[in-house]
Amino acid sequence: MVTRVHTVAFQGVEARLVEVQCSLSSGLPAFSIVGLPDKAVSEARERVRAALSALSIALPSKRITVNLSPADMPKEGSHYDLPIALALLAAIDIVPRETVEEAVALGELSLDGRLVGVAGALPAAMASAEDDRDMLCPASSAPEAAWVGAARVFGAETLLQVVQHLTGSAPLERAGPGNARIETAFADLRDVKGQERAKRALEIAAAGRHHLLMVGPPGAGKSMLAARLPGLLPPMSPDEALETAMTHSIAGMIRDGELSLTRPWRDPHHSASVAAIIGGGRGARPGEISLAHNGVLFLDELPEFSRAVLESLRQPIETGEVVVARANAHLRYPCRFLLVAAANPCRCGHMADAARACARAPACGADYLGRISGPLMDRFDLRIEVPAVDFADLQLPEGGESTASVASRVLSARAMQTQRFAGHEKVRVNADASGRLLEEIAEPDAEGRNLMSRLAERMGLSARGYHRILRVARTIADLEGSERVRRHHLSEAASYRLTFAPSL
Image (cartoon, rainbow, N blue to C red):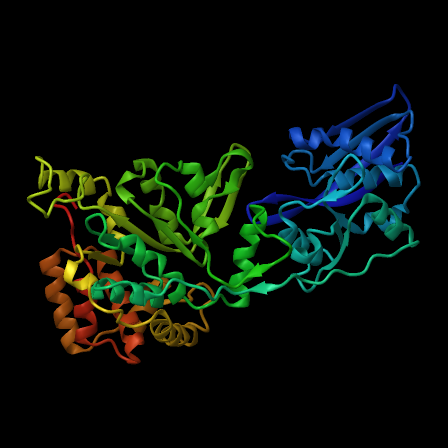
């Protein structure tokens, strides 16, 4: 007779149910696992054998075959240990077969029978809730899975506790969700002296989730400004937090079931590969753009990233999702992020300073920033120059608006956008608006239309550039509390469309 236990296989942020089948048959004693297992799954037989031995349970002297169905889907990860062990225990009549077949189990086994936490508990709980099944998992993963309110999650420290729960001798209590965490300690915008225009651009970027590029010499404060952006962003809504946590769960980044309502901040080094940024590699893991979903992706020294990395960003920026193509599957990860990039004007960084510039200035600036292709440059809503700070400004006492003051305006503007886009499922902020919807919400007045006609002719705007100016103008109007986009909103928005190199 064949016994069955359910577990999951991860395809992107989705968990697909997998049936673990166990059969005992006559023949020479053997323990084989079939169904396209990877190395970690194949090694489960040794961990299961040792864990059962720790419970004083010996494997039967028969041929043990474990099949992972559907057999044509690759199985990866160590979370198959627990379902394989339960299917085997049901086959030798230690746990009731009917009870085991109604559960979804996942967890890694130690050699002494302890259960080790695994990645992906949150999407696994979503799958078990949709199929109306109980979920059995390690105690360390249970608080994370319990964030899915409809899921019946039971966490255990050891395999023995799972056996006692299934036999009814010591039922486990249903797990509760972990804590929700909100960061409150952010670097203050008041620490940045001067750079008022850059601060304004930072506020607009935070209010409408507009991509921002800052170009300036070394030491001008580009990284310092970017580091203050998280404090300007409002906390994530419950839906956004769950979306972000799904990706972080797949990546194994959730600890103690703690769900963060603070928007993620990712700042990869410029030596990162395409797989690290976009996603892929072993197991087709999510990349930095997906880990920054609903948050900020900061790329410092943008021209130093490889051309392949920079060009691979173009499609995800537009669509809000990335497809990782593999030979036997296409995995989708969400990636709606706020891209903030910083760059020097040239390789030496001092193109504007004749006393310090290299011999190739100013031609070196066009070569250096020319590494950023025109289509990618066009995707930045805000492109500003960050000049060097005068020494006199550094001597001034602390002043300017604080992070809390600017964040309150950003929050009000985001509230207006939430109300405006309440009936649109995929549109949350002004940066998401397009087509007829954008024309409706950002229709300029008569003076504004005349200005846009002149700007389009003078600046040679592409259709994408034209629409991005409209989106930024809509955000500027929101920060002002204006229902209508007016001429001065468009004028300010257009002023952030600087071109830094002749080739661009």
